[in-house]
Image (cartoon, rainbow, N blue to C red; front, side, top):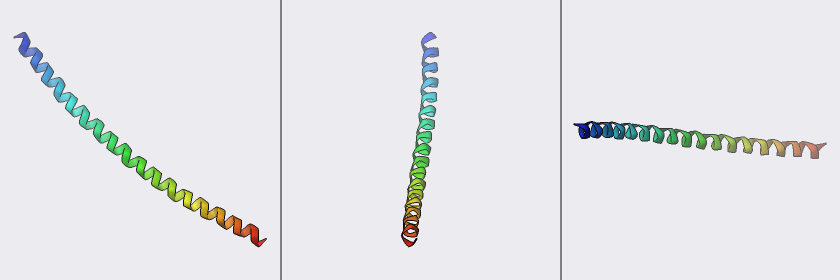
Length: 63
């Protein structure tokens, strides 16, 4: 009887572990997606900053 109880608990733990692994995988995928989007937005911002610096340089030359 005792072994059956232990086996049942081990099955429950294995099932919970599977659910936790899936949850962690989903979180990691979400973080990767959000990080990629942040990098994209930062790169776009860098392009805009560089364009602004170029315009400032052109304005300095004009004056």
